[in-house]
Length: 213
Image (cartoon, rainbow, N blue to C red):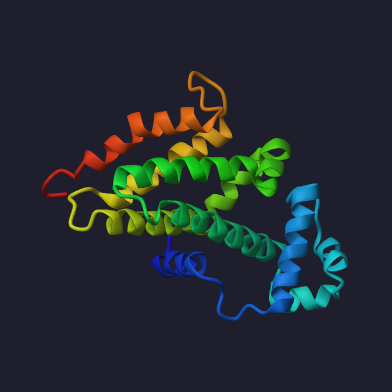
């Protein structure tokens, strides 16, 4: 499946800033959906469950979100936006790109491991996690990659690094650690995570694409 560039750019815009058309009722519905998903998981919750928690009619939700899948996507995009904002804030004033990679990885992994929705999905229905990242041909992953790559470019303007590839590798390493914990890497505390990132991930910044590619 190929990813439509318009879809990726649209999701990137939605990840980078709140939806321009969102209002208080949208927020109420999304808050209710998030609470339901955190409590019962993605699959067991119905639109009717969300409507009851939000104290609105099902038709009200369907006027704003075509179906449950669109509602799930809206919730996940909002949480991804909060996730990326936290990383941006944690790395904004750091002196070097290396520091940004380390602290961004530490903060990102910590927030993912402690996020109630992420915890719920990974514990009870991990098979539902990857399809959400790969929806629309992986557009969510690519949009998140673009935002992180822009952060790296701002930290080292004019550098020869392939920022897109570095950002995507960082995301994929973090996702693999979430999906397959344990193994030979002991990253149970932030000091260990920080050391791992410093030793193995910052070297990605020294890589540049082969000439002619």
